[in-house]
Structures are given as C-alpha cells and as structure tokens.
Image (cartoon, rainbow, N blue to C red; front, top):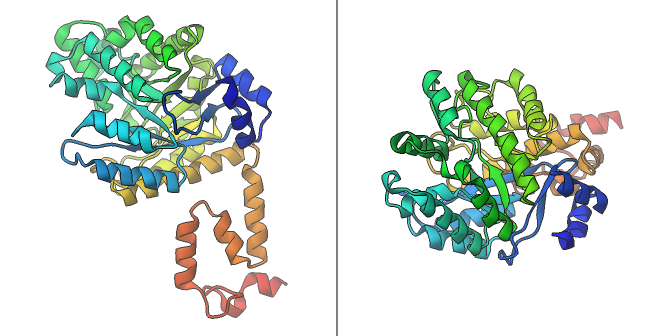
Length: 407
C-alpha cells in the first residue's frame, strides 16, 4: 500500500503525509487488492475528494454479461470512482471475473448474494459457504466487500419489538435477519469476525461494514434498529483497525433533509472518524423515476457534512434494474453532489474549477465551458443543438446577452 501513497497524494492534491496519517488512524482507506492487476488505486476519507460508486451486476431476470460490461464502460466514461458487482443471476463467478478483468476502477461485492445463490437457497446457507465465497471473491481480485456484520440477534429482536413501516430494505440485511430467526443462530460474520478479518487482511481488502438496517422510508430514519446497528459497527471498526484491516462504514438510506447533517456527525463520532459510505441519502420517498435527483440533493448535503463516499442512485431506483443510460445519469448526478460537498469542505481544487468555469462564461468561451462541465458530453450536445448561428452568443439571449451588455 505504501507504494500507492505518492500517486494518491498527487491525484488528491494533498501531501503524502496526509494520506499516510489517515491510513494509520483509520480516517482514510485505500482500495487496491494486488490481485486486481488493472486497478487504479483509489482512496476515500478525510480531506479527500468525495468519491462516487456505481452499482452494476446481473439479476435473475437479466443475466446478460454483455449488458453489465457495457454499463462498466459507461461508469468509466462518466468518471465513477469505483463499481460494485451486485450480481444475483446467471454465471455469477464469470460475471465478476470479467468485470474485474476489464475494470480500471476498484471493484466491490456483497458476498452474501453469491453465497445464497451457491447454497441454492437461504435455507441451505451455512457459515462455511459464506466464508468460502468471501475467500473465492478475494482471490479473484475484489478490492472491497460489503459485509453486514452489524445485523445481530440482539438488533433483530429490536426490529421485531419496534415495528418498522418498511421493515428491512437491505437485501443482505433481510437475508441475514431471516436466516438468524429460522436457525436461531448468531450472524456468522459477527460471531466469527476474526475469521473474516483474517481473510480480508490476507488480500488487502477494505471491509465495508454494511448497514443492513438502513431506513427504507423517511419514517424509519434514526430508529432504534438503525442506531443500534451503527453502535455495533463502531465497535467492529475498532476491532478491524487493531487487526490491520482497513474499514469504511455504510450508511442510510432514506433520511429527512433536516436530519441528514446530524446523522453524518453521529456516524463520525460513533465510528471514530471512519470513512462514511452512503446510499443517497434520499430526503423524500415520492420521487420514483427521479430518485437520482433526490439522491443528489441528499448527497450534496451529506458530503458537505462529512460523508466521504456516495453510492449512486439511478432513475430506475425502486423500479427495476437500471439500463446503461440510467447508470450514466446516476453517476453524473452523484458526481455533482460530491463536487458540491467538496466545495463546502474546502477540498483542494474543487472551488478552483468553478472559478475557471465562471471566467469561461464571462468570456463566452463555449469550448472551455464544455470542457469544464461535469458532463461535457451532454453539455456539448445541448450547445450544438441549441447554438446560435452567431458563435458569440447563445439562443437564449442573442443581442441581449448580459455579458455583452455589461461589457
């Protein structure tokens, strides 16, 4: 990992000492499994640019590998920082291996999905199958893994006693909850946490402690189940650091906008400043078809309050498997949110880009404006479609262009 520090420091515009210190104290994590030969090392955490993850992967209804490789190309072109393979259908091993083979971006997984598939059903799942899948994916070159170690029997009892409107919306969390209740056994990734850490350390994999009890409705935000799990994740994060395993914490979820800042601050306090990886958050439940926008609104506020890593949300969220176009829209929306957060946090280079854009707009320098845009492809498309026959103005204002009138 030490060899990656100068490269990361240069790309982040921070001193190498800042990266080294963050890795040491657990406020920065670096994705780079040495077995992922093509990966560009990526860091998340304190003082760094807010990163964006995109989820891809097959489903039972859409098991096509070629579709997911196309989405991977879109993720790279749209400048996502990482991808997660969440495949649950088709040849899961082949899909993962091909994504890793073709991805310059760090690749993450949620191993329980394949474990349940390999076991041919939740009823056949065992601890050994779970750990075998984790090791298999590690050998393939996975850089980070979402593990729901905080979904424990005690937290499950809390969920049973205090009824939630939406129950458990995390697929992995729901699987574990159901398995524990049926088998009357503790979550293996909690009960055998040391076994898990040994595998992750061997392959230099970042442990992403999953929020299996994240709220799926703004009415469930901040409830006893969510906070109870977060406290367990804080304890496990300390244990992971002591074992030499890098760790990040996953977070909500659906959260009212007036509670977002408080939840970001709570995670940092409970988890010792560990990098915070969040889905959204989505501050309203009624924007189906536009949840990439909802997520960007919540994500911008969350990033400004300390979130380090945003998991994208696409227009297809809550509705179905996203298309390649949906993936692109989701990545761009999350990158906008991340950049807004970076301006607020004073991340090196963030505000300077906006300064250059303002100068280009004042000079009516269309080429530079397009180059500086987060989505230059869409900016050029609109400009070419709507441009004036006169190249010095746009079709909105013509002779009444404020920049020309002002002089």
